[in-house]
Length: 210
Image (cartoon, rainbow, N blue to C red; front, side, top):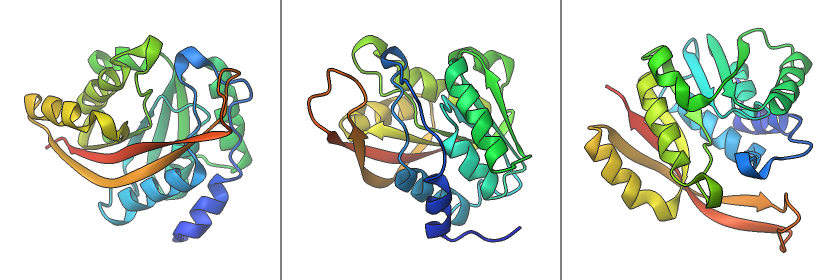
């Protein structure tokens, strides 16, 4: 398989279609191509956790992380999301790039842990941050991810929650490593957003499952 450079990967991910009508209750904010490419490139090149691995993308939305994983040679990448509209866009994106090592499942992500324990080598996600209506959803996603993964979970979390997450990781006896501090450029997606975009400080974290 052709080795993709970071710039090529980002350029490909810029062509991935996004939410047409994002749903506020599901916190449907797109993972920006630059952040997605940097995450995946690090997971792939530094840790070797994508190529020929089984990868799960939890709360996959329109599939940018799944598409990128498939491009980097995942043995199989499966995206899980509760929203049929997002998965329809995901399906078109996978077809557009003619990716055969990718699949999708519509379900409530938090119900997966009992059904698929330790099924995937790697879990990648940009979970809901658990704001307003979804308090605690970020940790529910993380708990599920840790139950699904054999090797590692890679996730984005608000930097302001780092101490809380570290405490939980210690409780769960999981090694947590902050790989990078990112500025998540959140575009105005809903009517109540007054600014064109807002920068949120976000941690890119690796959790080791062994």
